[in-house]
Each structure stands twice: as structure tokens, then as C-alpha cells.
Amino acid sequence: METPKKEEIKQEVFDLYDDYAHNRLSRRDFVQKLSIYAVGSLTVPALLSFLTPDYDVNLQIKANDPRITETYITYTSPKGGGTIKALLCVPKGNTKKLGGVVVVHENRGLNPYIEDVARRTALAGFISLAPDALTPLGGYPGNDDKGREMQSKRDRNEMLEDFIAAFEYLKNNKSCNGRVGVVGFCFGGWISNMMAVRLPDLAAAVPYYGGQPSVEDVPNIKAPLQLHYAELDTKVTGGWPAYEEALKANNKKYTAYIYPNVNHGFHNDSTPRYDKPAAELAWKRTIDFFNENLNK
Image (cartoon, rainbow, N blue to C red; front, side, top):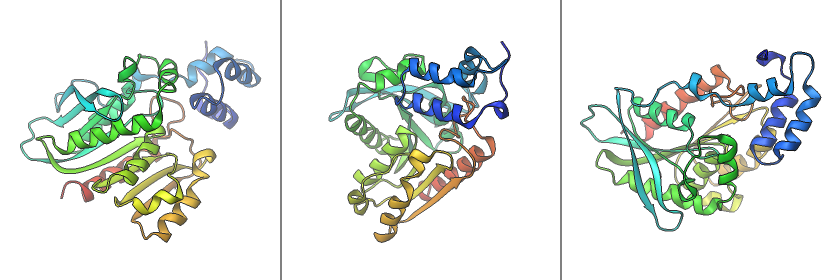
């Protein structure tokens, strides 16, 4: 089976995958619609293989990296899912208190990409905590399709409580200086926005292509925001103008970036939606922002 090249894939294929990944299309309908674009060597199986995350090849920082102390811990989420499992990462040999970062997964649980992001965050000089909101259902199942199905069974507001509890856990961790921020992707981007709404002492929020809070919630935001959007991600990015207007009207501190000609999920290097220049620039901006607000 010949592997397609990214430049051979029409934008409509990425749009179809986005609908499937966000439960707007069933797998059956996704495969059926995908067949329209299966021409020549671009068979349906080849397209499916191309679009499927590849964690084995694309992890930047693998588990048990000698520069990091990483531990799976559990914490209590009284208003959410009860006991939640999370990956805690601290720079190896660290002797001083560091800013903390809650790393929030997409709509499929704590998969290897998000664990990788947690390790990258620790290597950048922070203590990171990446919870798995699928813990009450048994945890990330090792497969993104099944993970999406599982996460759809949980109430997103209950999951928000799980991540708010993660903030409290990290803030009180002995290695943390008490200043905690959040970075989240897709579903995690919405969580990041909502944590900014809910937590007056959140020190920084970085939503990546995340759904926006209601305009009525914006006055409650106290944390500085750094927002990352993809130009081709019209379903999410289309909500930005109204959000920005509300942020301006309420004199909130924010910086927003819309990356041209990239798709939703451009930071996720395990899928073909990944765009290396945009992802690297966005991540540099994220770390600089956290250094400015957390490690004071």
C-alpha cells in the first residue's frame, strides 16, 4: 500500500477527518465520503492509514527520558469524576520551586501525544500535570477512536471540574511555586478558556484551537490569555471575532495568533494535519508566555 504525500491530499479530506474526529460523522459515513477521494493509488485504506495518528514514530520526548522525573499520580476531583489519574513531570535534579502547567488533552483522553507535550513542558523548566479525564471510564484505551467514543459519554462540565481540581493539586505541590497556568488542545482549548473564566488565581491560559466561552463569561477572566488558531479551522476560528470583541470591551489581557493555511490540530505531530513551522512557532510563544507569567 503506497503512502500518500501530504501535498496530494485535498483539503476536503482534512475537513472530513475533522468532522469525524469531532463526532460529527460516524465512521461508516466518514469512510463512505472518503471513498470519493480514493483515486488511483490513493485507496481508502491508504487514506485511512495516512490520517491515523502515528505515535511510535513521532514522539519528541519518549517516556522515561533521563532529564525528567515522571510519575503517574492520582488526585481527587470532588465535583467531577472522583479519582483522576495524571502524568506528573518535573525536571530531573530540580531544587527550586517552579511554575506549574496543567496540560489538557483533546477529545480522546491522555494519549501519547499529550504525554509528550507534558514532558516537553517539564524540559522547558516547569512542573507539568496531564490528567486523563477518561479515568472514571477506565482511562485512555490505547486507541484514539475508542477514546473519542469513551469521552463522548462524559459530561464536559464534569470534566472541567476534573481539570480545576488538577489546578488545585498542582498549585499545592511541593515542587510548585504556586503560580499555575494551563495549555490545552481542541477540547483542551475549551477547557483552558473555561478555567480562565472559573479560576481568578489562574496565572496564564493558552488555548490551542479551543471553543470560546460565552460573551457573558468574559468579565470573569483574570488570567492573561495567549490564543492559537488555525486559519483553515473555520468552525472554531469563526468564533474568535466575537470573543475578541468581548475581551476588548472588558479590557482583558490577551494575545491571539491565527496561523495561515493550517488545519485544526496543527500542533499535533502524530497526524498529517501537523504543520511543523506553525507548531514550533506556537510552542516557542507558549513557553515564552509561561516563563513571563509563571516563573517569576
